[in-house]
Image 1 (cartoon, rainbow, N blue to C red):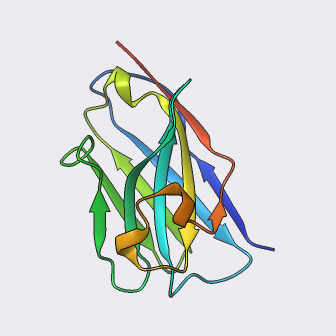
Image 2: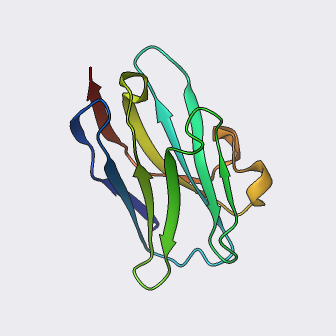
Image 3: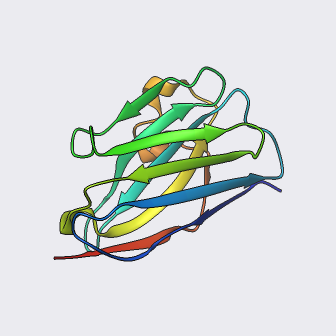
Length: 125
């Protein structure tokens, strides 16, 4: 059974940094693209960042470009989201997801095959 387990959420101040982790269990995703999405209260789930597990190519939403970095640790089967210069509008539940589709399409929730349960990040002003 495939499991994606997020961790690292919490309450932070505006301007702070935070690292989210997504531990992958149950299979290897060597041919997959891994993504982070977020959903703020009352809003749709939005793309944040994605990485190709094999080659390491990345994609970012414009709203986080230059502030967030997605990275992977093949040995630990873990994907990270490094978040810097956090803003109150970054407040959301952050979800890790995986897809067998190419990285270029791993930017929309319906393209993803597997999901974690999410971790809440709250940024206070």
